[in-house]
Length: 342
Image 1 (cartoon, helix red, strand yellow):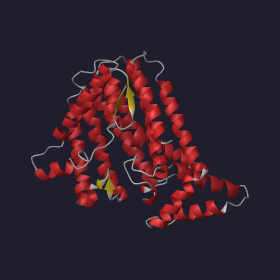
Image 2 (cartoon, rainbow, N blue to C red):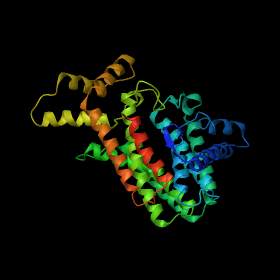
Image 3 (cartoon, rainbow, N blue to C red):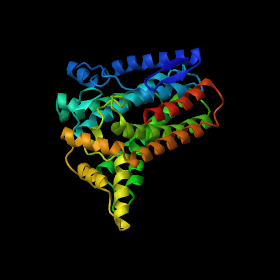
Image 4 (cartoon, helix red, strand yellow):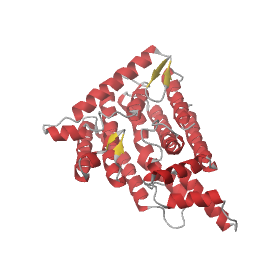
């Protein structure tokens, strides 16, 4: 048994392990080549997050999806580079919108340089991804365009906020489906497409990607609160400090609102927690208190259950696929994602 990647993905087949490892190594080379510019400063800025590391979750899914066709087909590695470049570009833009100071353990591009450099670098990465995409054919361009529209729509929905009268949790899950699941789903789809898999296989893997994408992001929501380490790639409480209302926070607020609507009185702990969440969490002591209260709150367990539910749906979506080690590996990813939120 070999462990591949940061998720502890267990692989029992030497051929699969070799294909995945070789593919991911080729993706790293492709990322360095794609971020190279004749202007040295652009190269430095574009490689800032590439060299900082990352989970490479999306390229991993491309490699596994390709196992259902010809994993050595010429479009597989470029497709994986495209989805990772697209993901990286969104991080540059996200950090500007969130005014983040750290990303992947290093200063964010906007804090190291400025917002203009970060936005333009993200645009540069999008342009490089588009250039590579053009070589993959019109169908790949269409799929990526649809995914990118969903991604941007999700980001806009998050920025605008929930509409009056709408369930905030329903709104939040729709945001995540656009912002996160869209590109993760395309990763699975591209792997199978580029490998020449049957349409039924491509459809199955696309559905799997939608659900594992939701579980992946919700696991990050839980980790931001529950983890005492840097397992999530960021300091615990980062989302809280930035005022991002993740699923556990939405569950807390929903529970308090229902208690009040039913004529009850929220507990002192819940009232204090809401005061903290509605206030300034840039103070370390206030942030630590909010984290402590959230870690002991039923809302965190509700968010964990949602993570498990989406992971279970992802696993179930794989059932039409033929039995093989790649299918086992994809099912194993469901367990690995849930384990992160455990």
